[in-house]
Image (cartoon, rainbow over all chains, first blue to last red; front, top):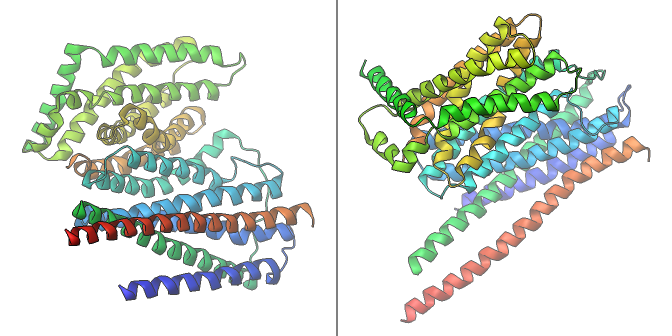
Length: 227
Length: 212
Length: 50
């Protein structure tokens, strides 16, 4: 048990250091982009959060697969926590993406931003995940249903992305031209630090959340044993 | 070959049940025509082909939802699903049989919807028919699995649309695209890809959805 | 601060806010867990006395 606690503390410490370092680098040290100026800096927080959300869903699907494979009930909790984190990072992706759209093009939402549209679809999908969990009694049945659904989610990610690209041919988006970020070496370095920071943040929050949920479950068992 | 014999038997049972009770299919037919009429009133007079095609696909989606909502209701009402699951057949055979049943119902509904659409809105080309055939496979495959999930929950009819709609957005894109765009090949190919991926996934994971 | 600078700062602040809200919610959960432990300890001691 102490090994687990040590890992949690280490993760939290690493996450704190990386996040502070990442934000500081992004806001102060990173070179100013020639075209977009200061507003380009939002890229250092928006994209790492989006990638971390994908990582959360992927992690959740992996744990779901383990559940179906081994039938060990602990994987259900791990999968659920990962998806939960994924939705939180997903909301953050949508919010920061919306702010980026506002800065770049003056609108709070645009369908031509493929990543944003994809995240909206995924957000709807994973919100339904929670509705599914809330309407089934706890137990192996709910674990199995959630696991299958989580697997469908990761299958949906590439398929949806393809669909959104294909849809642009007839949805006639208002084309916003934006020069892709020409990332210089130092920009890439800052990006990597921020990405590591977000992933560490996920890992740390995930570990804590999981520990809390496990304690909750054990206390419930204890209560049943005593009453 | 007993696998396919099981599937055939189960599918026949569902279709015979429907032919005798005649509750789901007439409702689907009436619904899709009513929806098309409603859409006529909700479209502006100079609406494009894309708009009316899009609405046709929406009508088909919700007709599918109507049919899927009833896919497992008979079993649930008589707890036959537990019996089916205990039966010595591969659980995925249940999924395949149900999907074929749903596919058949959708086909009948579309046989009515497409002439109605041609009458009310505009001509129906071969691309639309091809897209509908491909889309039906995906909708039936995914919908049957999700209907089984919803049947296991307390919320049932409320839950199925929530699970269904995000997953079938790619189908709508493929279907509308194939109808509207010059070269439908890519969209039809995309629909086929969707069918392949999600049919395999549904077939493989169905036994976990009905397991206790 | 220009408008775009305000928005960028806003984005970073939103992320910070979400993490802080999470901490608050988690502390509430911890408080509830501590209450549970206290109740169960009392239950166990009563059982032991009986």
